[in-house]
Image (cartoon, rainbow, N blue to C red; front, side, top):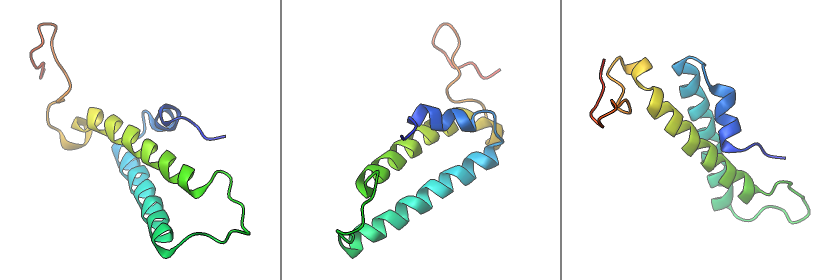
Length: 96
């Protein structure tokens, strides 16, 4: 059974930002490898994949999207710039 994108990200919560970057790069490498395989042609019909390559590709895309959202909300830890997602109670940006 595959884990949800939220569960995937929860495993990475609290990790140093550098580990988030490494996880993102790993997902991108896996996606690139799968894309190359898809472009090379259909897999051998005698080989059974479970989950299917298409499902794995879609799930990795969902993991990547969830991870990128999480990273965007924690980018200030890496960049040292104010949190772009922090707002005060009146809806203004709270950069303190």
